[in-house]
Length: 89
Length: 111
Image (cartoon, rainbow over all chains, first blue to last red; front, side):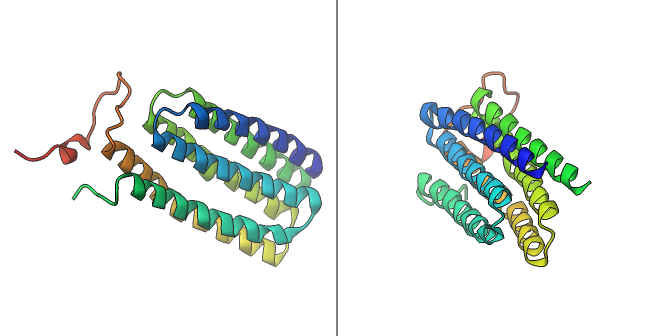
């Protein structure tokens, strides 16, 4: 039952990744694309979790920890880069 | 029993992620799209992690999963806040039916 649920969730995640890719291509501004890339990274993390379920290798959880760190740093860095480091003050 | 719990957690998390992807595609504005995108990180990803905890209830897996959940709940508001602030500073317009803009006072120079 767990494996069946993981497979169905895998197909749903792939469909949502396709929808996010459409927004990544047609996004009118750069922050739209940043949001889409953030969502794409979290979708791939979800796929990694489902691969943990399907294969039984729990060592892959370290990948999820590291990529969630890197995604946060990347989002903050790109949004600081777009405003050239400026703030409202 | 635990198998059914993991099944429901996986399906519900995946449906949350699908709903947020549809919202990202259909909503008309950057800020509304950010509102849709938080559903993936807060609900969908956390539900899939809870499914992993239920499926593999060993000590290392549970500790790592709880660490990931705490870390995500601490950092994603910061990232979303930075994206929204930079988008507002770049001059991205709101939807034409938007009612108010509280940040407008801070961007216009004082007279």
